[in-house]
Each structure stands twice: as structure tokens, then as C-alpha cells.
Image (cartoon, rainbow, N blue to C red; front, side, top):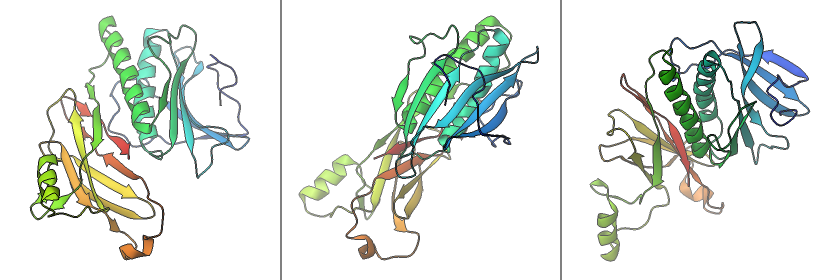
Length: 284
């Protein structure tokens, strides 16, 4: 919805409505307050995060945008970050990126996404455009936030920040035996011995933790159209598995003739005193 490349002024809209801030545990206390404005224009929509600087100038920081031509059947979103060049502006940018992460995470996981930076002095080499899945864009937002936090800490006038730790989700073999989730080796043996039959409603994901040990108390939820779902705790090996059930009570045979649907796995994340393990998604 930006009017011109590199333009970080407030975009025009046929309808401009202030919005309440989302409830989010990702915010760092002590950062500048961010305003949230919803814009509608020519069938397009955007949520713009704004900041009023000490001189009273309202600066557009970041917009989460439903791209022009996006349809309910094929949604797509852009995340645009407007880089700020002052120390206080960079702190406001961190606050905006923390807000943006929570906002993007609540959007549909199966949509298409892109992430790019604008503003005078923006360095594409340090903040390259990201195009792809929701999870990929969330990782990009976390990486930009991490770079700004490092710079703010080096400048010596930042509030205490908790590290953000991203995880990677990988689809796993979802065969479930009598004793529960079976690892790849167990599944291979059972298949060789013809002791298992693949269950299309069995789902599983492995969580790869890159910077922290596996936390306790995290969970994974799974969903699949038209209305199948299940959830499971993530064990100490990073695995979660369950069997999808029809939330409308239909027998599986009722959907036998429908084309195969993709599965959405959603990792809950965890907020700890020493770090934030970020929530994310996987579509497979």
C-alpha cells in the first residue's frame, strides 16, 4: 500500500480507524509507545504502526498489508518496515517489530508473505527482502529485531532486552503405534514387518531448537481443512504427534472424495525470564 518506494509517510486511506493494541507477551517494557491504525483503500487494507517522536512528528514505522488483489481463497500479505535513523527511533522500531511479530503470527498460516525495508538510509544488504511462508517472514522480523537490539545495547541507552530464540518446525513420520509416537527407525521396522498401516489423520512435527534447550510446557496444535484438528505437548526430544479428529463429528468417510488438504502446525512458543522462544507455524 506504500505510495512510492522508500516513502515512509503515512499512506492515504479512504477509511482511517485507530485500533487497540493486541495483547502480546513479546513486548519489551520501557520502549516507546506504538500506535495502531487500520486503513482501507480501494478494497485493500493495512494495519499501520506509528510513533510520535519527541518533536511531535508522527512517523510510519511498519505496515502489515493485505496486498492488492488478495482474495480469501489466495490471501497474501506484505510486511513493510520503515527504518529509523536516530537512537530513539531505533528503539521505536524495535517496539514496532515486536508488535508486528504478534500481528503476523495471527494472520493465516497458508497465505503468501513478503517482508521488506524502506526509508532513507535503509541498507538492503543488512535487511534483504524476504518472500515466502509465514514462518520465513516471522524469522526475518526476529532477525531484524535482534540486529536493532544489538545496536541499541552497544549505544548504551536501551532497556533490558530478553533474547528472542526462533525455532524450526519439520514434518515428522506420524505413524502412531500401540505405545504412542514411533520414531523413524521404529516406523521403518513396523512397515517392513507389515505391522502398521499409514493413517492419513496421524500428524507429527519435530521442533528444532537453535539456541536454547527444549523448554517444558510447550505444545503443538494441528489443523487441516475442512475442520480437522488436534493438539499435543512437545516432548523433551522436540516431538509432538496426535491424530486429527473431525470437530463437526463427521465420519472420515464423509470427506473421502475431497482432494488432499495441507496441514498447519502451530508451535505455542514460551516466554521465560531468560529468553523468549518464539511461536511459529509450518504448512505441509
